[in-house]
Amino acid sequence: MHEKDVDTSATAFLTLPKAAEYLGITANTLYIWRHRRQGPPSFRMGRRVMYRVSSLNKWIAEQERADSRSNESLNPISRRAERRHSRRSN
Image 1 (cartoon, rainbow, N blue to C red):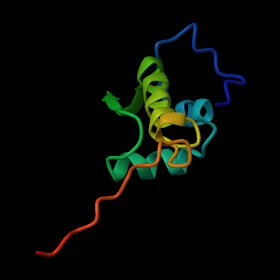
Image 2 (cartoon, one colour):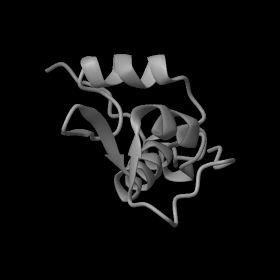
Image 3 (cartoon, helix red, strand yellow):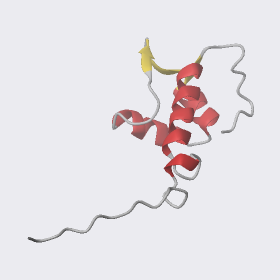
Image 4 (cartoon, rainbow, N blue to C red):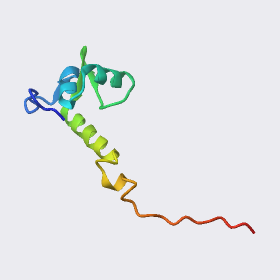
């Protein structure tokens, strides 16, 4: 996450370009995600597409929890081996 040059303490909302900068992605990527109804939640304020900083942070946390590299409980290597039951034919 890149927070350089984005003062989030002064505002609770970011425009699409500022939100993209906050996330460390291009504005075009964020626009495409919005068009595909993916990515963080957004809304229109007049003509501008806006993102709540709190929603961006929540979305980032959700992405981290869903990623097996960030969430040890999802890592298949760290799971306990389960015994497989063989099928028996009668």
